[in-house]
Length: 389
Image (cartoon, rainbow, N blue to C red; front, top):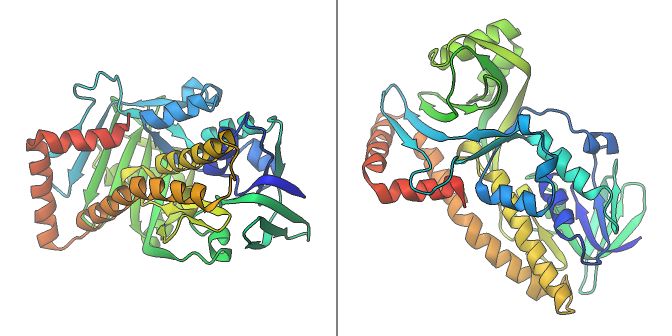
């Protein structure tokens, strides 16, 4: 089988990239381990994605934003950061930007569903579901992937979009810095008695980090980050005991709570690929950069990264050039690294400071929050990062 572009991994980044190439006359093959049914109707996975204005604009340009039900789009009006037992909260709103909201919270499975609907009927796009890739190799003229069933796919450009544990990255010989944090992120949707007013809270408590993300219908997404053993204990509690635990952990700020639906646990791992491109190949999404979830920018970064690659490929098509040339891939890699590194490094530094329970670190982060509150340029900078307009 031959095509112009082979995308391995049909997560949000891979699907968005395939959609972004529509109308250019390119033949695209998407290879994905999941079944067609799982792609067409993704199961709820507990993750609520904080979309920036720029990401919403991208989804609108891709023609998929309208496929997300309004009931699943929750406005994020304000964000607050809390530290330990202090009553002080560093707050961020839209300020003088003229926007009504900082961003929007949307379930991950709804975004995936909308993106898949956006590509499943596109001419020139073929989805190979239930398909694993056995091996990959590239040369100066093409990329070649051998599938688990023995079939071979040749392409002018290979794109790895297969998670932060990327098999494509390994096969291409691209090294990555991987940090297994020994903690688990437990996510659950909680119904609560008191209103949240569209305010998201990130609370760096002692020995845990807890976020409450405002959703529609009197609910919030509880995101609890604790050592893996503690996370597994919470997963084993019955629904009533679990709800009581989350309510108490959050110090009853939202009143009585009940668990809505299922709980999901994700071990925390961050990754930084030493290169985002190789001969005839590129990495996008988490395969390139696996962000810590504390600033909620991983999805947004993946969406912007795939657009950078799509723009580089489309420019090559427009001038009649080679879509898999070194020049195209260098342009993508350079642009994405410039955008990704400050976010990645800054997020990791923030995480180290705000999860260090030693007394000096506790004092330092309290001072940092106070300083940030009193220095308008700092708050404006963080606001711009949150909104990414």
